[in-house]
Length: 109
Image 1 (cartoon, helix red, strand yellow):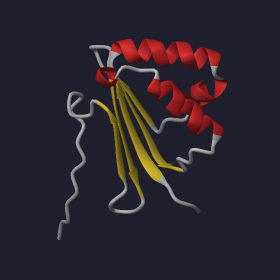
Image 2: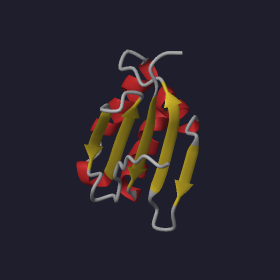
Image 3: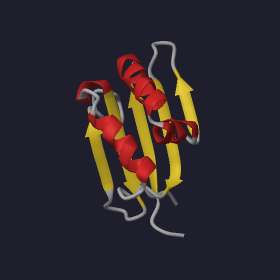
Image 4: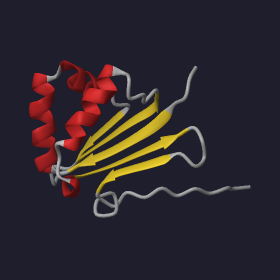
């Protein structure tokens, strides 16, 4: 069990190059990239990654190394959204609006 989050990451081609170089040096970052539930590579070089139902704890080594790699990117080159189990737990990093990333909640009957 435990607290889980959904993670959405959209990277520009430049950010993807940097992240790929880091992943070659940091096996935990590569492991995280490989464990994405969904990976979409677009024609313009943008990559979308989705990690579903993930225990995203800072004290997990792979998460802390992945976060450290994100902080090396220019904010304009990526968008990151983490949605936790709690309805008010949403974290944004990078330029989510510039990357067309938005959270929308709705109730349907």
